[in-house]
Every structure is written in C-alpha cells, then in structure tokens.
Length: 171
Image (tube, rainbow, N blue to C red; front, side, top):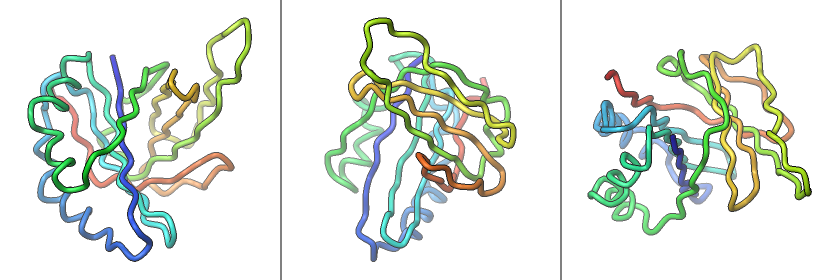
C-alpha cells in the first residue's frame, strides 16, 4: 500500500465554498477509482489558514501512478498549479467506518534521529471511528489521521479538517 497527500494553501480571503462546490460536483468521480482504497476530500476553513488537502491510500503504486500520470491529476495542475505531493507509507490503520467520516484530526510527530530505529508509537483515540497512521521518510514525520462523525477537540500538534467526501472502492 502507498498513500499520498498534497496541500493547497489559499489566501485568508479565499471563499472555500468554491472548493466545497468543486468537491460536490466532482468528488464522485474517484468513487471506485482503480486500486484506490480511499480518498478523503479534506479542507481547513480557518480565518487565517485555508487548505485543500486530499488524503489518499492506494492498494499499490499502480493506482497512484495511474492517478498522477494518466490525466486525473491534471485537474489539480490546471486549477491550482504545480503542487508537491507527499508520499506516505501506511504504518497501521482501522478504516472500517471511514465512509461516515465528517471530520479528520491530523496529528504530526517528528521521528527523531537515532541508531536503533523502532516502530513509532501510535496513540489510539477511543473517541474516533477509525484512523490511519503514515510515516514519511523524506521528512521523518509520523502523521496520524483520526476519523470522526462530529468535530473533535483540537490537540497540541493537530489540525482539524472537514471531510467533504469519501471516495472508496466497493470492490
């Protein structure tokens, strides 16, 4: 499995309803995308911090390659310009209830340099309906995403995203 995420930042005066409308009109197009386990259409609509940050998990690199190189990602490029894509390796997850996700809490932790590398600790949150933990070897970060039906409390290292749509394979 392989994950990916890109983050598109907007000015504080950007109307995030444009993104909501875009997802409402187009989000279904990635439902049953080949090799896609899920895509979460995430936004943060803060006063000074506005983001569109879709989060993906693919069964293998084949689905990710198809999405990036066979025209699907071109919609992002033509609308928002060149974006950096973070490549994420899944560590552990429970995505059984992901389809009913309305909010996602992201907690990010640095994996500190050492000479005896061990599995990162994943804090399981009992109030969440599911989660996925990724790690990124380029930045040496552990990224935990917790799924909720109702807005969760913010954590010290966290960002709360609204989830506009969940695309998931039914196969």
